[in-house]
Image 1 (tube, rainbow, N blue to C red):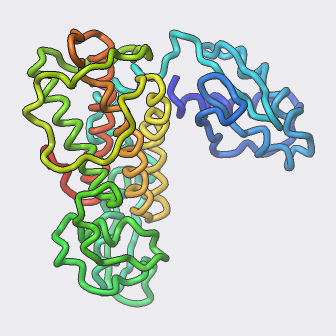
Image 2 (image 1 turned 180 degrees about the vertical axis):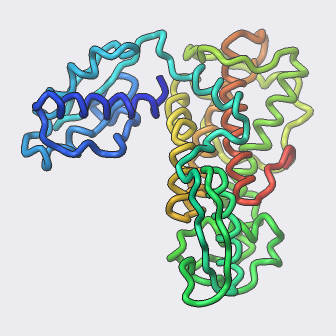
Image 3 (image 1 turned 60 degrees about the horizontal axis):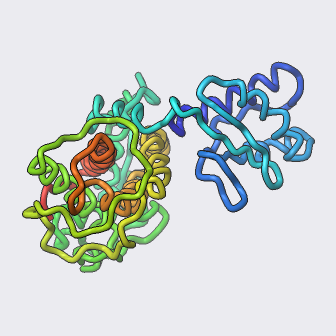
Length: 356
């Protein structure tokens, strides 16, 4: 069960409680599901009870207790515990491990993962001023609308209905990729910053982190092939990996300084923070298309990159380790993240490098 599927399960539980007359609320469009916070437990947690408490006219814990049995009897959920003011903490059954299904879906759909029908049959007419940032934003909105089954047209003139804050100067000297990122990453109401910082290969540069993460994943795939194994979705075993030197086959090591990463972690500690943004990718693309907001995609790619980078040291065997099913599963998860990064960059019109 992926976080997105679990979110839908939570909403179905709310709907059942409403139908049974135990809650008198409007069923929300979305239930936020994420990591349990301090004092929480299980695999995931949701604050839906706190969200519904005021409209329901009941304390959050009472709302949580109403929803708890309706979640606990769902196939794939092992246990539901209420903690704090009313957080629902959900433990998935072992066979409901979300990794394999999500990774297989991303592998099957490729860079089109996240494409949908949120705007199917709709024609979105964009009217933009003659200004470089507006032109770039409109170009990406056309791509996003198309990815959601719609069609967008662009006209120039006033009154404009797509008018981001103009770029203070021509971004073209930054080069095509950095120039597009510079005007797409900020929210439309924020003034874009046109500077050489977008070209710096350091962790303070979000564009570098996104492109570096993609290039490093591609490097891991090449090095895995040299070690004699390929990706295969499956359980990502959370056991710690043996310490030792890096795998002996490292000809594809990136020449630029890597972002500072923590020492090699346990695979399990870095798994959940990565699954959530991968599963959320379709919702982000749909929202970006509906709201004509490419910046949502750009910021989401930074989230994916920042989540996958700490996971990558767990992927390849080290020292005397032999490639195992866990390594193949970890590689498949890393490649899934690379696919999301490549697909998102493509929609923004930015290159996803094989090498960096």
